[in-house]
Image (cartoon, rainbow, N blue to C red; front, side):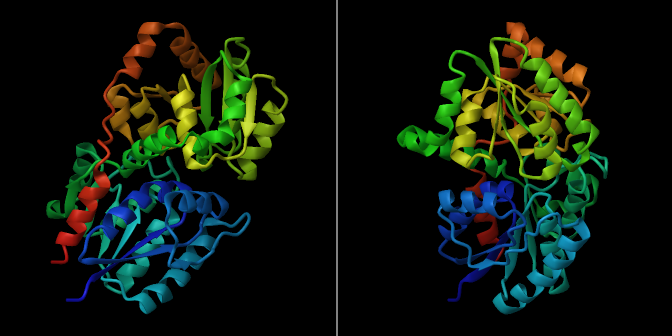
Length: 375
């Protein structure tokens, strides 16, 4: 009996972190033949995760170009993925989340009437420009996918509200929790996996670590300037140190290096591989971020998250109390950070809140549902 061919398609570091557990779980299903296609929408950061996760792509389109526009990348993704699907003839593709790779892979599959499974389906902010362009990437993918793996009941309800077929919606949890918990266990067994971070933490021994990540397009310009201003004001405190793995995009790296580069209690470091990033979350007192995934990850370690955005497609964290929207107003960012540093009750309320995003078994559920769909 021939196996069902499943092709996973992803292109960025966050997608890889969340899809590697799915790849391994799919390969544990005896009825499936699993192929991995990467677009390399991110190149170096993607390769780090693939190596650590033990996944070698079967197809690598290597599409990353410096300073590429969204329309240029979108066109090249569509033109590149179509011939891959024609040659490989998958029975289904699986995509993840909200990237341009996700939307264009779904379109290329639709043009060939190949079924699409969408991992991390149903996240919505309700504003097509926040996050931009991710909100529309998700919505387009939802109109095509016939398997929608929603991480939470709220995400599932968002899909039902858009008239997505209820039978296609499966609540699985988020695979980032699978990746996070597995990586934590790996670090405990092999501390050298996080060795590259240790000199930074040693430099700030005895201080409370505020971890920062920022890369969203809607924060470029004035938003980045406000974030930098807030970080400088937070780092005035002698008991605090800021560790900021800086995204390589010049719209992020340039302003941050200019504003923060010489501060004795701020470490601007290169992007971390995933084990080191997990170790940073574990060591941090709290997290400031405009990332989506970090809103899911940090609460698993009991770390409050201040979200430097005006909206989030992950409102479950806000509702649960694990995260708080603070926007990009420097005064608000500083005030809420200081409150968490100085008010033990406020800190405990966020740190002890239940993480609504999963239990570490999402990838297994996704693999079983995928295999059963083709029996």
